[in-house]
Length: 596
Image (cartoon, rainbow, N blue to C red):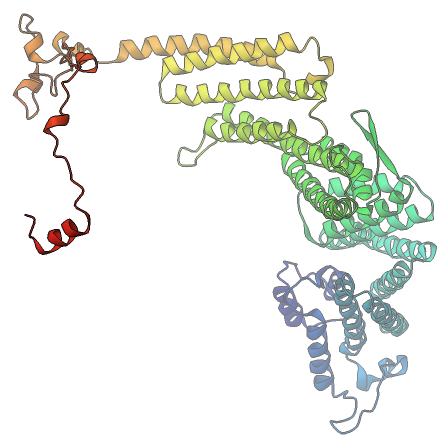
């Protein structure tokens, strides 16, 4: 029983599990797969429910082994004991697998509850109960493996498995010293096993060691080791651009560590103004800002750097959103108290500071991407079918940079900071020069020599303006690209452009002299000059200009009768009929028509 091949012989089940969780694993040693890799695979974010899988697996094992706990009407508990394993009737290694699957079921349920406890804190009590149950089953497995039928390797693996489970229980209970001792014991066993077997087997053991190490560092930090935080940051860097459970665990541990350090942080100073920081999320973010920037500077490759930039921007956006919620509350309080809103409050200035961090991070990220694309532009194109980088891609990046810098100049509370405005204007000039340079490069590709030459001159104008203004702002160019290198490159490109333009003119086919001049003058205006014009016999000959141009002509005079106002007309009173006074008799006659 389990003398050479460990605990498990059912390779088909292991392959089913491997396919179910969408992870590739070479089945080298079945015991190693279950005791080492199950915790790597079981993760609450998977679409497959690991707890359900373990329950179904247990049911199948009990049915296959005939080791059922009663029937459908009555439950009768049965436990695997060391005496049973010594009996030849139970000489089947799958009896050990029963205990292992019970531990895995409790563990997977605990991991599911850990996810749910983020929104429902009461589930943390159930989480601790499941973890204790898993550790209890692990201890049972370790005792069962003391049987003389179990080989030494399996015994060591069972001890490491039990140490890991007990360490996780202590970790959740925040008993850091006991948790660290358990994790160190587990790590030591795996390291010894890795050194005793082949490289193929050692890979799995080393993988487990790497996953346990962050927990050990975090326990050391809580015990009092101040260097543990730096070690966690280095481990995050070494994790590279990949994600997965390892990266998530590192991020969670780093966040917890910063949350403990943030309790001592109360204010931040920026642009000569000290601002109190009362929002916990802002404290945690500002506390880890320096570590994030150092990690980006130490990144080994562009993929890792891009991932760190995205992480920093995501944290910054979340922090800004939290500050905005506080700003809304503050605005409502102002409306109630009818306070004047002219002065920039501390919370508004903190919002401006966080927005500055976000926008400047966007600038640095796009600049990093631009440097990577520039390096690829200079490399020779090997595959003609594959689309390589073009100057237009760089133009888009510099457009985003300029847009971010334009937003920087409008930050609340910095309108009167003339030094800040000058620095932003200087940075915009630098990036305008680079944007203009790559626009010229795009014109060179389509052989528009004159446009490209004009743009190169514009680049030199921007660069010289930057050099003249930088004398008053010495510290403004330390984080910016070197404009002197750009000037040197532009001068070289200008000579190359002129040579290419001359060669392009010489290589062009020579046209007849009649076709060199394109004259749009109509035929009626050039009757004394002869040259062949094929358009005259076409459908739209240029004979006359139609419609003709307007010509100035004298206006039609307007006559005004000014003498009429000075003419005295004769009286006409005698011509006007006088109405007589007829009285009542005349009125009656008028009605009946007698007077007409």
